[in-house]
Image (cartoon, rainbow, N blue to C red; front, side, top):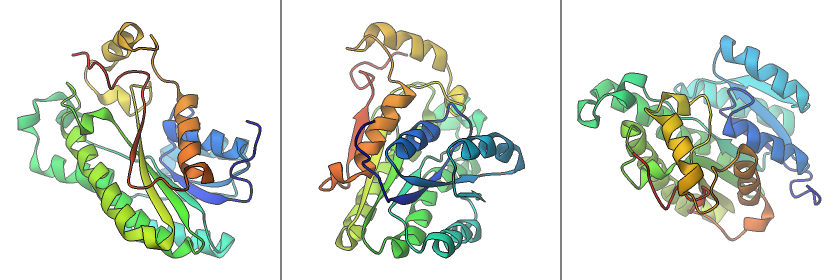
Length: 258
């Protein structure tokens, strides 16, 4: 992509599940821009998917991390500090809700399922930011991924929409706190993209097809386009941007199909 916007920069990406992940699209753009990346994986099954991807980009570190466990998050950043001393960016592309809580009516969301969705999808950003900040001694950028369901009631998104609304609020509070340290915190909200996580949303394929006719660009946004938008928010091009939700959606912000 021409200019190496992240030349000499190092950081970690949480949430790569496979080659279709938005986190992977972001990782590819980071590497193209000259950045060095560490990746994490949740468990042994996902490690088998993520390790070949890590090898393909020459990732210097591939680390286990269940973001529901503080000790594992702390271990990731301890490893980063040992290897690199400091970091420049973090990508948080992690969210989870029980499939049943996405399929049933929102009012039927279970208490435990609600707590789990908030823990993995929202609190993990707070915990990661807490550990990342001491390693961003020269400032840095923290980026998370949101979705329009944070601001509108998108059919089938249910508890995850509420979690994303909380996530966007957390972005603002973290940005206000970490700004004095030169650390920017932003969210990137994309329209529907075919990913492993999206498959859990009811009628997702119908929403995806509908966008071809409804979106101003007459198409859905691509994984590469999400990655390029992330590159802007991670690089010095957005040095004055923090506490914001940046939309890249090819029009899903205009019409929400049922």
